[in-house]
Amino acid sequence: MTQTTTKVRTEVDPDRLQRLVEQAVGDFGAALNASLVVIGDRLGLYRALATSGSCSAGELAAATDTTERNVREWLSAQSAAGYVSYDGRADDVDRWSLSPEQIVAFTDEDSPAFLAGGFQVVTGAAKADERVTEAFRSGRGLGWHEHHEDLFAGTERFFRPGYAASLVSEWIPALDGVRDRLVDGGLVADVGCGHGASTILLAKAFPRSTFAGSDYHAPSIQAARKASAAGGVVANTTFEVAAADAFSGQDYDLICYFDCLHDMGDPVGALRHARAALGSEGVVMLVEPRAGDTVAENLNPVGRLFYAASTLICTPASQSQSVSRALGAQAGVARLTEVAREAGFSRVRQATSTPFNLVLELRA
Image (cartoon, rainbow, N blue to C red; front, side, top):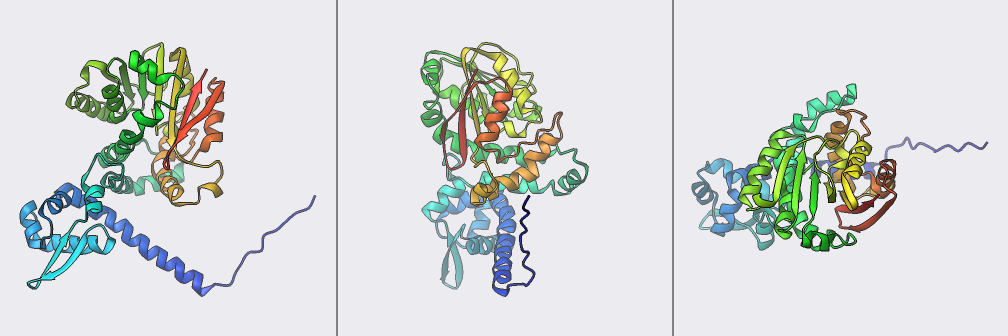
């Protein structure tokens, strides 16, 4: 048997070290500006700036009932980050504005390019860093419900625009025969529905079908019911507090999992319950973060994002539950297929994908 060894480089390369430090400085600024984005979103600074056009810190503060000195520092930081445009000085006063692209990214909650929700996820997750540190030591994880409420709200705001752009127009048509069934009137379960964004989008698109959302997190189900009423789809939606392996109902035409299976302690048990709840021609649509099947394939900006989220949120959430499979947010098609087959699904195919999501079709 031949053994190979990897030579470990011990001498410091000053250029590499400098690049690493420069990268870290950029990351420091990005991390701190995440909080500033959330603050600006909460206070309505972006929306007021979009409405006002070019304005001074004092004018923006007056429009938002905030303090000029704080607003000036926020505007300076945000323009250094590229999230606000600095217009220069006029009459000895600094002025700022938002470009058309910045308006979309920070004020248009229906656009797939909307960013504020993602920053809310970042800051919400970071609030649990001490508890995640302890989870590293104990291995007992940290439940989704134990996080700050900003994580729940931010997750809905981050994912909903992408679902709105792709779910009805691309993902459903990619599943064999499913769209026609929903047009005629089918029965659909949305497991791990959170605040119900995906459920409501489907209910609006297919008014003859009935949609049952479920989530173990009671506050999220309360939010989903309110959103359903506001969205005018109470007639064809219901929501229940239920674990993924215990949601009610039978003979479903479609059972959906949107970016949640990897968070579950027992994804095989969850899918096994879904298989038992499907009708004879029923389909499971499994939407998961886009990933390759190896670490090397995921060493890119999308992988950087999802691995970090998985470390802080997804993996500890799974570890806090029974079985603790801990798939992680970069499971990839091969591992997801393995889980589906363990649950009894004989046909698994990748129906479609986006830059951020994989969409798998599972059939018994």
